[in-house]
Image 1 (cartoon, rainbow, N blue to C red):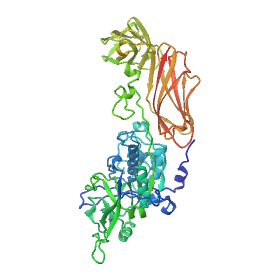
Image 2: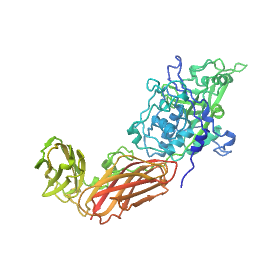
Image 3: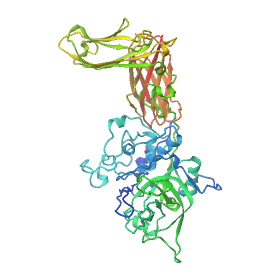
Image 4: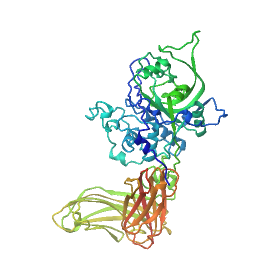
Length: 624
């Protein structure tokens, strides 16, 4: 049921991080460029040699002279002053793969969160800013990442001004120095997005890389040694030629560049997104001049990969594919880099009607989305009414506090909910009633003992079939002395039958729980989430809708129970495609039972290696 994992390789230290060169993109001909160093050249450690890897294409295949996948790239990002290029390259790669899938129109995933997750959740390379494609992509398969808005990127690394421990040699610093601390609680609870596989190494021979890009229509993440002069980088200890910066040309290094860069090594990672067999660029000599042969003829390098960099749009401003893209020589890639690829996700996003989110990311939410056209909440219009004038509740007074909302909208009711916000030092004193059209519904009657405050929404079927218009009266009675309170506000949401015709539409009770919960890995306790419903009537049918993110849905066992009774299994280790489960289940096991009560959804991950998130779930009861 499950896939092998890379944890053992990580423990053995076979996969080493790539240190990154962070370019501050000053004007092309002035200033020194800053760079962050960590585990130089190590992105290739653990990678098979090209001789050990097969070519991706056929030996006799004729490849086009030019090709690119720029149309499915997310915007250029900027890693700033931090040595996290591999994180940026992996994040750009994941955004690209999601764009290839086409379901999520504008993916913008968080580099900040992936840096933390790779080091804390995966435990990879905890005492360096560096990482590599293999560990990052495996982390996305197992733990996922969140959106940029959930954990915005911090462009400067922590120093001792942020944490006194963030000074000295990298090995002596705690992991928090390389992750800039821990993400916020909101970020940790946010929806996570995954890739379906950790990926594989591929040969960096030019025809092999080109065949992969052409056949899959996807990019390739590469990483490895950084040669300063070849990049026109200000950190070079030998002269550089700055005339290629605006085009983003990166040439195969000469012997002097290889030797000089080896004295203060660094690494870099980026995406290959195309190629041009015919592009020719004049080489650079050891003195930083345009290279010529003995006859004075230009020495040319021919054939370049197009790549997407992470130095912002101030670099390579004149590249024909846009600022931030560059060209790197075939020989540089083949001789000095390793390449890693992964699979695109296969998403199937469904709009959950009534949760206030654009679940399918089409720019339309809830009833505005055509996917909700047949949902009851959208067929039966709802009207909201609010009374937010705070009023004191008389202490130990049977008359209580009486407040009314006058509803002028006409229609036959098919559902009602009332929300109360009451501050009180002993809510066990309180009784709360709602009255309309001769019907009195008791919402709360001296429960919960010494607990304070009552902030709750009550879903009601008591008024179904009644005319909505008229006075709705809330009465709050304090039945004992010594404790006092205030009705801060209360509100009504009334649902009426479309066109005033309820027909044979059954009465329903419904609720939702959108508190995110982590599904622990290989743990029978799983995660539990409750929805408590109040109201009269007996269950005819229950509809359960779940939104779960997990890298391998086949690990999951999902069940629901009522009031601690026998669980009803909804799904067991079903080989569902993709990493997002948004599905409705019809349950008849509760038929005939009283509708009121607490319904508990239980989600268990029954295999090792992954964990996921219960994003939300909802319950609708059709009543007899």
